[in-house]
Length: 297
Length: 302
Image (tube, rainbow over all chains, first blue to last red):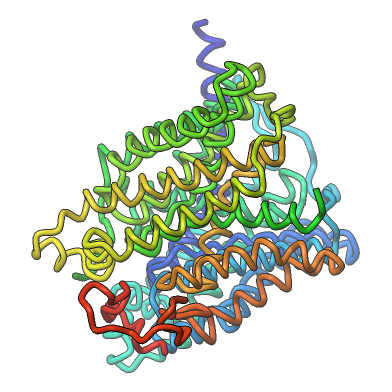
């Protein structure tokens, strides 16, 4: 106990924050689309999975180094998400279909994108070639692998750029307006089709980046996209409608997961996380951020 | 047992499980990402009861339903008052928790290796009778005052509450009905396949069930049954195409949702009247549920 106990705790929290940083990328991408179209977009996971594979092949076949691989995977995510919007969601939106149709379509797209990976690459596991040194940095009694540092730095840069874009660019401002009220935004003369496409593109960029980072830290397999549920959990816990809340929720989820796994192993921790989730929802249904999204009566 | 009977029984049991999703999503508009976990719960409770505790088979079936409804009550009571997305999340968490417990309690359930050695007590006749009884039950619930009140809640919760319908109470009852149906199907499944494993009951399975319901049309019992039966048999039929079958399956669903969002059957129901065998009488209570125009423009979809 004592000193060594606390250094273990700090160590696990550091690990949790780096995992949470990647979850935050997923959660914010998930929340971006939720804010504009008000549905839980599970196809986000499919985009994540395919970009992770794109990054893998870019590293393996084109022998790209770390930064280009990250950029290629990120860009691929953005483009795939645009494709998904165009193929799956556009016509439902044009017909003013109910939210449930978006939801069902998004789950179906997740299955389809997963299956595309199975068809072309089989159900086997792949390991990214080594793009980054496996050494660890030691600060005091806490050691942290270079990969975890990369995860945190990449997420921080992505969020910095995103915050700047949402605040200061024309498209970013339009995305925020559309999150507020899509119809009024349209009435104000904004091309909503373009803004929705842009939202999917930005959300896809985040999915792509998280996909490559997850692929590098775990192994690559077609079902890797199901990690989208981490984003789903984080964005609901964070308070639907708030990007900052989603990011905070993801960090908390990462830390709690890592701590639980170190205490009780990976087996039963989903059961404990579920119990904590239900209690949290009962105590604070508006989520961390406190700005709950309101359905219009 | 011949191949076709096996596929048939399997399809009947799955359809019964999907009826659980159908009542929940069709009557209240809620999504449960833990519906398959209720099936798993039913399967494990019944299997444990018979194999480990030597409970008679019929009693084990009842026990499976009772446990699922009890667990469902706790979840529903705590989460149905808050927003719909939270309910979806809570059911998802519940499903993963159930799977974690099944995986971990190796001594009782065999863990991830699965629970083997369950006697085959589900006969094709039992599966068929259960399915028919389940369909009959769901049909009557939908047509009753209770079912129509639920549709009012789905269409506009605020308006329904103003008219004196207790939305929470209705949602909870429907949720429990769905949990019971899926758990019963799970118990039948365990005694048919003689082997159950936690991986069969994940959240993707629940999502697939929702897809099946929308494929046929969530406002049509006929559609939901045809959707569940055909989509659960389809992977078997398309077995020659192996890897492509799931892709084909998802493409069919995407086409349906895009071009016929109300589902294949819309609001059409199979009955003596629609077949032209009996003249439709003007009598009261003959109207099928689902005629109310949906808020958000379902009517405009057609």
